[in-house]
Image (tube, rainbow, N blue to C red; front, side):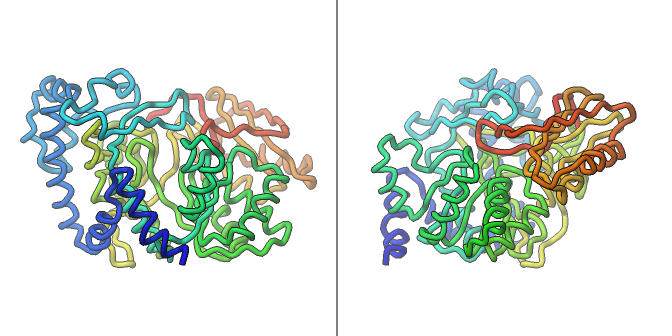
Length: 446
């Protein structure tokens, strides 16, 4: 009965209060997920032409950019034409903040937001108050994962959905009505992990929404202590999900793990489907390019992510470089959906070890550490020839493990790289509560 109340009353009420149109978009997206790739492209490009006309007429930054480059709105008709427009970087977003705001839209229809600042100073930006399509894409994916509107869920995150509510009592009421429980990713001590496990047993959520690293730490604890916690699904985002993490989480909670991808500036961008092959891009909302040295990467080739949000009219993000690396595929999924596929998201451009002839990605690094008696680790590239490896040891850790790490790392690195091992009791998360396996302070261009 409570589930039906959430589905039939509370969710539509919040939809109306926040000015969203989630339910409307869910119904539309249920249909568009089955249209052909050609129809998807046609839908995108119709939205793109309207967005470009709007940006040229109402957003000073784009009007200036178009004039500087000898462009008119009619020059941008297809996704391929986007290459004529210069890339919008985070630095340009900061420097041109006011000129990126649409002059014809009321301030009441926009919401100020910011990134988590995991790679430096947080970036501020405006999103449309109506985030219906983004949330609709999220709910469409939840249906793929066997979740219904109104199902209870737990979230291990940096902040609660109710973080703006000052009074704890009203937070609790909101969480009850919405059907979720919030667990902070900032404190995952053994004492807290015990509390998390007992909370999940008592609350009985249908699914868990979490950072991969947080879900993995909890899953290891659940397995070690023998807790019996069964979920329908675990969904992860905001960090790279590694195969060893997926395996441990699935074993601990007796369910499948699904990865989804987005960024604060553009929200929902891609979701893994039950085939567990790749992530389906939310092409009804975004156009994603991957670039190598500002030239389009080939299908199957890694590049830097450049995204155009087709639905943000209050502060348009057109060819926005968000700092991630990914691979786009031209293959089709066995699920029957023809939404384009993102083959892998490797994480931030700073999540690699820079070499003289390229880089070592964080997934390669994880293969070295995954079976070692280590609670947590982090590889920091201070300079091109200097690495610091922070390690929180498990009780069975020995000198043999240190020798193994040094040998394996040296197999991948340039010659004469100095490696310092730093044994510690604590490795700090980012300001957003995420864990980063690799951090490079060396400039790198794909």
